[in-house]
Image 1: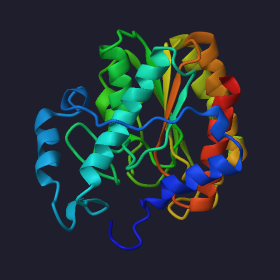
Image 2: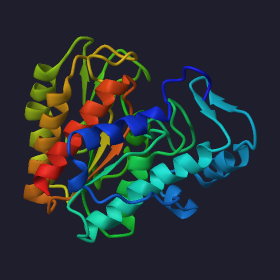
Image 3: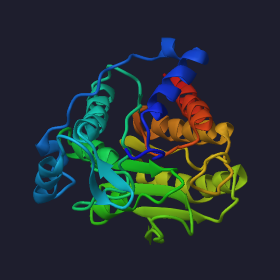
Length: 293
């Protein structure tokens, strides 16, 4: 990307180093993310949009998709592997080969709409994985959880008319993408948080709004847009979460999955741009997943 762009390759290596430092690698089964197929992408994106992203992939230099979102020569393959990684994780978890999964992938995906790239996102990886569980494996109910500091407008738009999906999210408002999410009990449960909100507000939102809806919906699998930019150190936002908050919310979702979804959870990295905080927060999330395995 352009110099200084926050969506940088060091995000992934920072997480890998922190997992090693925390002794979590022994709990993990590493897999290389494959390329998502066009058919998998077209479950959630318009075919013309997918073709357009392929056609705009540059051999040299950068191509601007929107003011925040650029493609370099390797961006297309990275985005295909991000989505493909979530599909593979879905396959492994449903097949019982792993208990759950954390997809350490970039670029993020939850802002990508059916026919629009935005907010660093080309393809909506978490939506691709959820749609794969529904359409390739015949699941009847999946939940998509999003605790990124930015609202997952793309995921909401993709699943707005899909009754097999319950989406629950917290996010800072006002903040990019400057939309108030839908509130439809049993389908869309969006909880905007004011600048400065921290773990107390997160726990209140989860306990009072997410968990009752999740219990009623009884998802057969849970997908998590795991953004860590709500951390108090992150430069792009103003919430005040700490590592323990991410471990707590992941553990709460593990409990729901244990009751309703045979423990099946797939998390995919979204935001998080203060590298030290990102590594520690992602490791906290993985620690909660590993404790359930």
